[in-house]
Length: 336
Image (cartoon, rainbow, N blue to C red; front, side, top):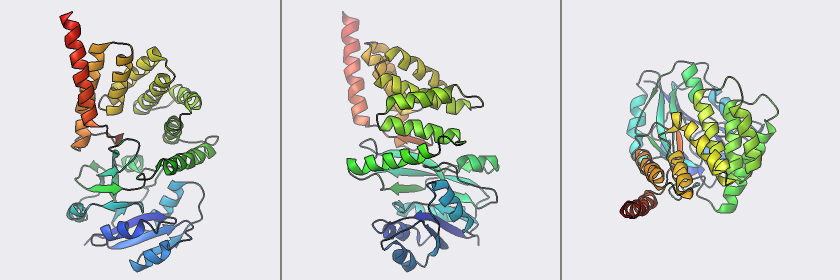
């Protein structure tokens, strides 16, 4: 019978670790934990679950630690979680069935509670995958393995597996510190040969910290760079549209948003941004169109039918209220 390894990196996670390991102890064959310098009871808790524990000197790079952990996992399949995450109980049986599946990367739905919107965010990541040679994580922060799976011709398949992330269910001060930590890590890599993924994450982080001028410089560089994929170019243009909107340059914001629409039409945040722009310039018809599209794309996320890998869930009730308000404005305009 194929075996499944849990792959996890930790540091000072005594608050979350018991919950996380309890959620997977009945589905994994072994627990592999790489500690990057805990000073609390993290190691003690890990030992209570008979985990295999390794130590790794922190080098300000989440992928480096994650790849070291991956090298210590002998299982035929890998499930990777963070210590502040847990596998939903009703996903255990579905995880088990993939242990006998042909090699694949299995998309799991990761629901982050209390992140940048009231509803949290939803991410689709291949958190479960066949342990084949040549796989590696990339990204100083928000590390991912999707591209490596594709490069190694490992098919990506959908699943109903759900993971709950508690790491952003903290106060504003805690969130600010996480953003600043991520910014520091991304900036430390900027003058080296950083990949497009890290560059886009840097822009996103700067925007989240209201550092729009700094974000704009980086977004321009990505947009003007050579050898960039169409998807990455459209994402950079979406970020530029956000920056221009925040700087009250609505014409430029609209232009960049529409240019990014080619690849991101099912992105709720892009539809919402185009609604905001058109509402600001009193283009009620277009604003209504985009708020309607936003409702539809947001519903796809809520129902786990969206193909987007990472996206915030917007407040569906608020979206409907905005649509109703615009509908009344349109009706009033048409009667005049």
